[in-house]
Length: 280
Image (cartoon, rainbow, N blue to C red; front, side, top):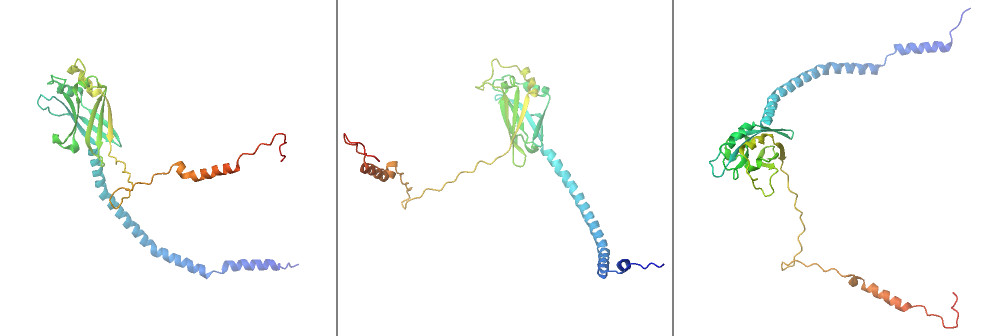
């Protein structure tokens, strides 16, 4: 017995065959155009990348020496030389001796002082400690001219009892120090030398003082408050403001009307004797 295929099965098989065999022309044209674009743009993009990489390498090679020079200049600018000496008004001018180097990085200064023996040599020719001064100098921008250095002084006799020292550096807007303030503490309130005067050997601890370094940067003063000038008369005199009225001058009319109303209304008359009050 022969079995005839179902009509629905035959139709579905025919549709599947048509989907496999029939091609879509618009899709084929789009794929061909994309392939042509890739074939044309590919070599150009590779050449552009190669040129860009070569340009970048050349720029980096040129910028490396400049970067290293900037780092070197920054390292030199961040190191400051300090000098000190003991000066007596009646003696000949003493020579400066290197006190140490001051380095600061990212706003954190650090002082590297010389040995105490170096400072002891400064005290050998000093006989009168009452009028002697201890001076600290800031060498500006590596200048060798001593008259261009910034100098700060304290009394030499105060160093014997001092426990701390303060270095206040004034820095310009470009980060270069241009002035120096030097303080020691504690000192007497009147600033006089202690009695009896200390002996020079007691100053050997100056290099072991607790050191505080302050950086003072420039700051702009507050802006002035501007006010409108007062009006002037044709004669050039200041126009006097109208005096403010008093409370009575402002409200006398209302007060008068209120008093008149109270007088006109008057108090309620009391009832006569023997008469009952009127009912309300």
